[in-house]
Length: 315
Picture: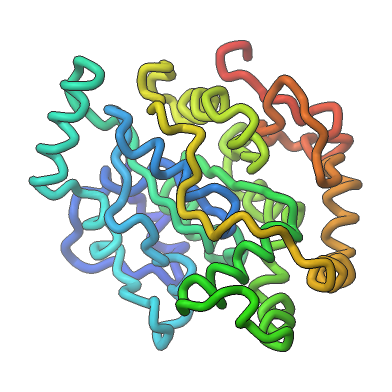
C-alpha cells in the first residue's frame, strides 16, 4: 500500500502538501515520460482500455514539468491534492469502461495500477525526479526513444505547422532553426543523459526503454511486454485490431535534406552518445525481436548486445 511518509514530506521542496488530501493510493504507479513524438500517445491510447489500468484525465497533466514555473501557461497547481484528484475516474467514464471491458473481455474494470503520460517528463530536472521518487519509491517509468532527427522534425511539424493550421512549406527556415535550437528541444535529444537521470533515482528494473521503431515492427509484442513491466495481465485479447494504425500523426513527409543536415550538425554529440552507449544508429535495421528493454545499471555499457527485451516472465 502506498503511504506518504514523514520522511517523504521532509524531502519535498516543490510539491505542496495541504492539510486535507485525497487518498494517497491514487498516486500513480507508473509514468510514461516521453519525450514528445516518440509514441507516448499511441502507448497511452492502447493502455487506457486495459481492465487493470487507470490513466489520468487529462492525459498530460504537466504537474511535475511546470512545478517550478508558476507563471507558465501550462502550470495548474503545485498541490498534491490537485494532482491526486486527476487519478479518479468520472462516473460516466467508469461506467463506459466497465461496459467496454465486459463486452470485449468478459471481465469487470478493476484497476490495479494508475498511470500518467506527460511527454515532457523525460527531461525533468533531477531534483524534481527526486521528489517524484520520494513520493512513491516503487514508481515505474517508461521512457521512449526515436531517431533524434526524425523526432525533432516531427515535433517541429506538429508545433509550427499542424497546430497553427499551416503546411510545413509555409514555415520559414528561421522558425525551424529557432525551434531546433531551443534548450528544451536539445534536452529531448539527450536520450542517454535522460535515461541515466531517471535511472539514478528509480529502483533497478523499474525503468523501461521503449523504442519507437518497435511500434511499427512489433506493436503487439511491445504492448504485451509493457503490460508485464507494469504488473498487469498480459493477454493478446487486450490488444485492439487497430494496433498498427498511427495515433496523433503529423503526416508522412520525410525530413527535407536541408533540415536533416542542420539537425545532423546540431545533434551530433547526442547521436554519437546514442551510438556509443546504446549501440543504435538510425535507420535501425529490421530485426525479429524487440529492441525495447528494461533498463538495468549495465544496460548502457555495450547495450548493442543487451537491447533485446528483458522478459519479465523469463527472469
